Every structure is written in structure tokens, then in C-alpha cells.
Amino acid sequence: MKLRRLLPLTLATVIGAASTACSPSEPVPPAEESTPASPSSPATSAADPVAVLPTGEPQVIAMNLDVPWSVAFVGETALISSRNDGDVLELLPDGATRVIGTVDGVVHEGEDGLLGLAVDDQDRLYAYSTGEDGNRIERYGLTGEPGSLALGEAEILLEGIPAAPFHDGGRIGIGPDGMLYATTGDAGNREDAQDLDSLSGKILRMTLDGGVPEDNPFPGSLVYSYGHRNPQGIAWAADGTMFAAEFGQDTWDELNIIEPGGNYGWPAVEGIAEHEDYIDPVQQWSPEEASPSGIAVVEGTLFIANLRGAVLRAVPVADPGTSTEHYEGEFGRLRAVTASPAGDLWFTTSNTDGRGEPSGDDDRLISVTVE
Image (cartoon, rainbow, N blue to C red; front, side, top):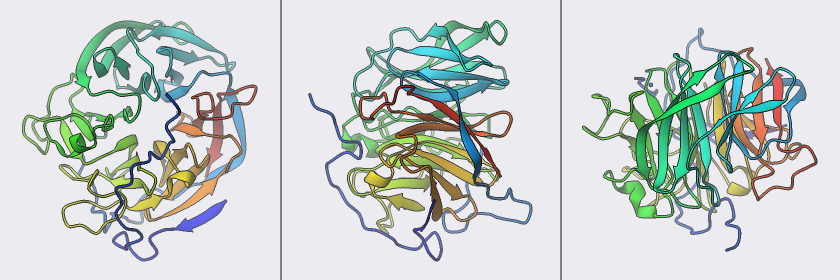
């Protein structure tokens, strides 16, 4: 376990410089209403959840998965997205999985395919995926009982999100305000991240029916924040603070606190730049030690799954400029992380995604207790 303090004084401490380098952090293979805390002074009190860390021996609870990208829960039942083929899997009590349905028309090339999943309080499933005409967000009813769940008909909530073999974003989540949030990548068109008329390079906020909330920062627009390159993780702390993890180029990956209407600088800056027009990340890492994808808050800790870095990173919410690293290289590339209904931390490997070195039972879903 490594202790890494990147912002030794306050969240306003400068630890890096801007960059506009051109190499992606993952090498390209050949041809809800919250009021986020201020980044400089996150709200804390004696009643805030305490920071926790992984304890005990990690347990493999499912194996031989095919590029699992997201895990969501219907009650106590886990659903897993398979990126390449569009299947939605139900995890059975014995660790086996069964296909409950396939998202129609999924196109996979490079990083795109069936990506994020989320479930609302009516047990409806939301899915972010790539189709022939771009990325889209759909909603599905679920029928049956645990052990025999099935996808209902798809309702398209949003389509036409620019797609590309790389930089598709794809994480979705329902915030504490009951709104649906989605991350989108720049799809290879860097300047679109600064264009408020484009859905690329953004974090979007919408109602559960796909509408524009009246209190969004830009009237009539789904855009909640912009200037993102390829964010793949969103999560909320108990006080409503929204965090996002983002792939940089070959200089800095980022952990950001998201403010409504905030501009996070891409492609003008990367990492902490101290530029008055852009919001700096609260923590940054070189891509070879990070490439952050899914994130989750458990008690007072934000957990981050890292691909190239092959670590599970733990960030205390009360001090988000620091982090500890766990399981370095033990499981290979890590893609998704979430809290189970029982309170354990679950994370998936991503060694079958074309960039890893899979073992005989990859990919795996792993559980560990936290305290």
C-alpha cells in the first residue's frame, strides 16, 4: 500500500502544470440536485462518514466474464454489462451468470459498446451504449424475479451522442437529486469539449425521462459541466459533493469535484493549470500509474478503479488531495467499482479488453470488506 499526498496543504495547492500533449493515456492499439462543496473547502463535520479502507482477503465472486464494464444492483441482485456483445448479465448466488437480455444494435470497436448501467428506485435499468448512429441512453423495465430476470422493451432517452472507437465516456449514475447523469468523451474531436452546443466532452444531467431539468446551469441544455476529455467515473459523497474521474493525455489523469456549469479546461489545459477560466482537479496522476475508470463512494472514502495503473485507489472524501493504493498489479487492469447492498466493495478486472494480459479465469468480479 502506498500513501501518496499530492496536495500537501489545501485543495488549492498547485502540484502540476498544463499540457496539451497528443498521446492518449491508454495507448491506442494498431489499425441528482446537489450543491457541491467548494473545491478549496470541502464541507466536513464530526458527523461526516469516516474514511474506510479495504480489509481482509479479496474474494473472487464471479469469473470468466467478457469485458465487464459496469455493475448495478436491482435489490440485492447484481447486473453486469458486457461491453463487446451488449449482453446484460444477472449474477446468481453461486457465482454463475445468466444473460437477461441483449441491448439491441450495440456496435463495438475499440473502447465503445455497452458501457454504463444504472438502476432507479422503480427497478428500471438505464444503459449507455454505442449504436450505428452514435452513443445513446436507453431505459428498460425488468420482469421476473431474481434468478429469472429479463429485460423489457427499450425506451430511448437520448441518442446522437458522438461516438468513436476511443473517448466515449459512458458512465451513468442517478444522483442524490434523483436526476440521471452521464459522462461523454470528446470522441476524438477535442474542440467539441468546449462547445456547449455539442454533447461531447461533457457531464450531462437529465430527468429520468431524458428531459432537461429546469435548474440545469445552461437553460434548455443537458450540459452540466464541460471541458472534459474522457471521464469514466462519477460518484457522490454523503454531503452531495460530486466527484468525477477523467483520463488525460500522456501528462495528467484527473480527479475533479464537479460544479454546475464548470469548465474543466480540455483541450486548453490538462491537469492543474491555475488558470482563472478553468476548474483545477483536486488530484492528478501520471497516466501510467492511473488511467482511472469507475469510482464509488463508501462511507467517507472514494474508491477509484485504475486500468494502466492496475491499482484500487482510496481517496478520503474529507482530504481528496491524498490517496492510498491497494492491490498493485495483483489483479491487473481494474474497470468498475461499486458498493454492494451488504456494504462490501466490489470491483471488476478488465484484462480481456484487448489491452490486458488475461489469466485463465479473467475477467473477474471481486469482493472485499472495508472498515
